[in-house]
Amino acid sequence: MKGYMLVRFLQDLSQTITLRKPKQILRVSFPDGNSICYNNATTTYIKVLKLIGVERFPKIKLEVGHLPLISKTEHPKYKGYMRHITDGWYVNIQSDTQQKYLQLRSINEILKLNLKIEIGTDLQITNKSTTEKQKNQKVAC
Image (cartoon, rainbow, N blue to C red):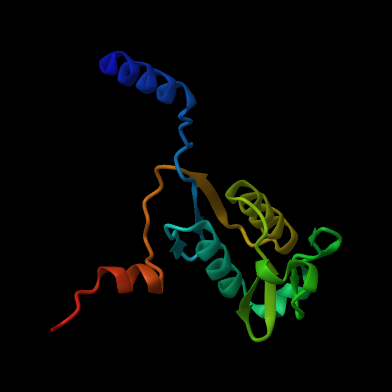
């Protein structure tokens, strides 16, 4: 009886397990050959915005929830989703990787930057974030 119950439990469990889609990441290549691709789409996104430069941010008129995507203020409605870019500028990151990809494509078109923007599960990671570097460092005793 115990064996039957275990088999039945495993059958029920296998029917309820849902597999996650592979994690997608972003890669952005600049015309000068510089390529940005972190293991995390948000890190790539923010690094690309830094490289685009604050002087161009006012030209980016994209919105999220009727508020600017990039602004000089942290919107209280999205306080947990506003990330500092540089020099007092913030970006709303309440979006999935696909949306960040589309936002970068829009920014590329608006600013005529000639960037190559890719999204995928098998892109070669070329950069490591500070937290990734810290994980890989060995602690000296």
